[in-house]
Length: 279
Image (cartoon, rainbow, N blue to C red):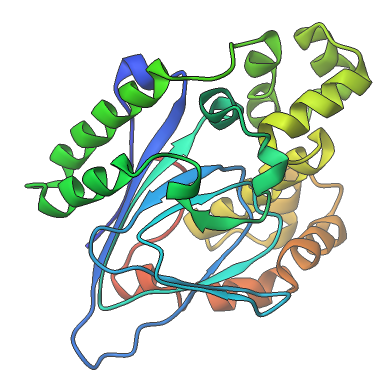
């Protein structure tokens, strides 16, 4: 069983942050737990070469199912993912802004959306999904994805601008970068920054930074479950535990401890795997 992140080929790294492969096989008749999928700073193209998943929005209860290739934008809420007994997903996690550059579609149009990727890309996706289903090993899947990404990059719709280099600073600056500094790096006014940032990520800079910080706290707790919540709050640049708890409730609807009790029952836990830091 596998839950692993892979580094893409060097010539596509400007567009792809990582490839993630998740592969679980449960015995027939064995109950398969759901995965409460929290917000994370990601825009993703996901291929399901074996079985699709069912997605339920936690807030509205909306159900989506039977989509073999999915594009989803920046999420700011939990979706519950229900998988089958032979489950494999190959995810292409884009660099911030790269999906906008490739498609020319404003990312705000797909915020909190889980959609059929063929409505955005061409039917060539079906061939890629079929190739993944017949691939002889995970490394072969990586090569299929690299080849596919090279084709997409050749057809990109928007040029790279300074803001495309500035956005990743929010992921690496550990909360120490202000909007004024970010605007200066992008050679934009703060108003222009807000507009172009949302165009590329689907959300405004403040919300994106909150999601980055929340994701770090979530992964830190998974990776080091023995750490107390105050320590996690401080290490992830929250003011205190109450600040961290409020963010958990805003994004997941649960207090930190309660959400991780759900997380501890996720499918990967059955196989001794965790969704920790990007590897």
